[in-house]
Length: 145
Image (cartoon, rainbow, N blue to C red; front, side, top):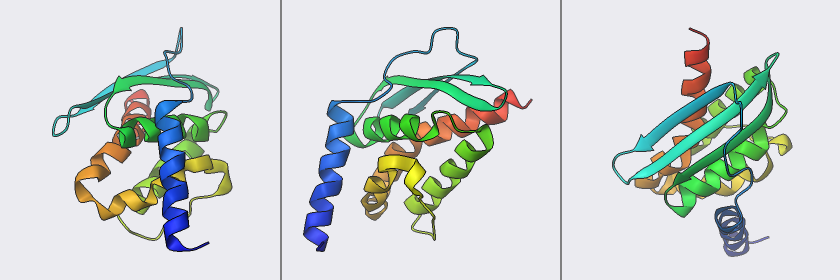
C-alpha cells in the first residue's frame, strides 16, 4: 500500500472513532474518575474506570475537543478494556513513544491506535492525542498513593 493510501486509511479510522466513539459515557460506580484538560486548545476529558483485582473491567470517557483527542480517547478505551493495569501502562508508554517519534512497539491488541502515528508530525497536536493517555497514567499513579 502506498503512503497516500495508508494516510487516507488512517484518516478514515480517526474520523470513524471521532464520529462513532466507542465507550463514550460514564462508568456507573466506577472505582476511578480522572479529569484533565489541555489549556492550550481547550480539549477536556473525563475518564472513568472500574478496576477489579488489577484488571480494567470497564472504561468510558466523555469530554469535548478536536477529532484527534476524541478519537484517541475512543481508541484507548478499546485498547485497555479487560487488560491489566500494568499492560495499560505499557500501552500508554508505547503510545507516548510513538507520539515523540521514538522507537515504539504498537501491538495488535492495541487496536486502531497506530492510526494516530502521523500526529507526531504536528507538534501542536501531540498533546491532543496524548490527553486521555496522560489522564490514565495520572489516575493509576494517584490510586497507588
